[in-house]
Image (cartoon, one colour):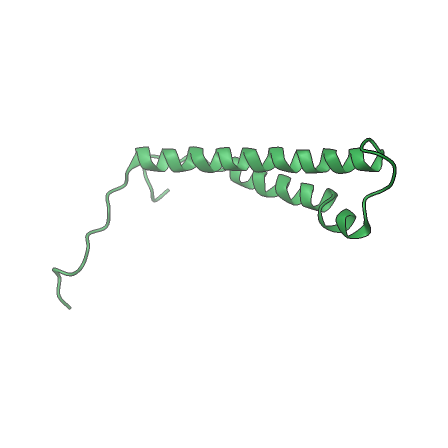
Length: 90
């Protein structure tokens, strides 16, 4: 073991941590918005707002309410992140 080859751990950078936090929160908010748009569009398709006929079965199971719900949940998880503290260990 050669101590020269070991890299010292990078010091905690509060500004970098804050930027990452804000970026992830914004991504989460965008996912929540996308989920809401998917669910509302699916609901409007069932009301036949885009013309006669219901969405096909595979679309109803894959891209309808379940996809909207998944996007909302994952977006809420990201958007609800705990604010970073000045101490990285807590």
